[in-house]
Image (cartoon, rainbow, N blue to C red; front, side, top):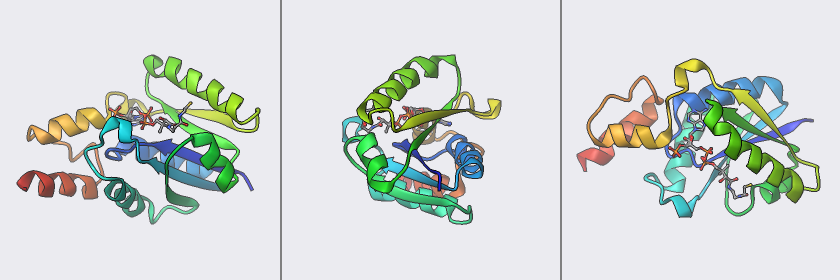
Length: 160
Ligand code: COA
């Protein structure tokens, strides 16, 4: 069984992430979407909220499971028996950091864990979670860029 992990902070999950999840789930036997606490990034949504959004958005997708993790990504992959990390590339600027992380993760796992890159569809090249947070907090429209559960969560949070 080929099990892969798609890791991220997902603060919040966007339609760009979901597009990568759908495509990766067609390639592997099981895809674990791994949401990390990322305390260094001071996330807007709590880990439990980010986890819940992902569960709701992916519950109808076969072969997708959502899990939380903290610490080293490679250790998490080993603990769930995954040999592949999936990452989305939106534009050339993503490449350098992704390349560095892929090599570091390969080294940390003694070559056992490979990273596979999927090219994000052009409709989502400009989307990032921080841009979504900024626009939403300033009252802008994000409904075409995030799943419904996320736009509702922003509305509730901003209503106070
Ligand atoms: N569609 C939309 N947005 C996307 C996207 C896509 N396909 N791909 C990436 N993004 C966005 C993310 O939402 C995020 O936005 P933001 O920075 O504005 O909030 C940004 O691009 C960066 O995403 P990413 O590189 O995935 O960062 P991340 O924080 O979500 O994930 C980890 C990074 C969690 C994978 C990495 O920090 C990690 O592995 N941490 C564990 C500790 C560890 O092992 N460290 C050593 C790694 S070598």
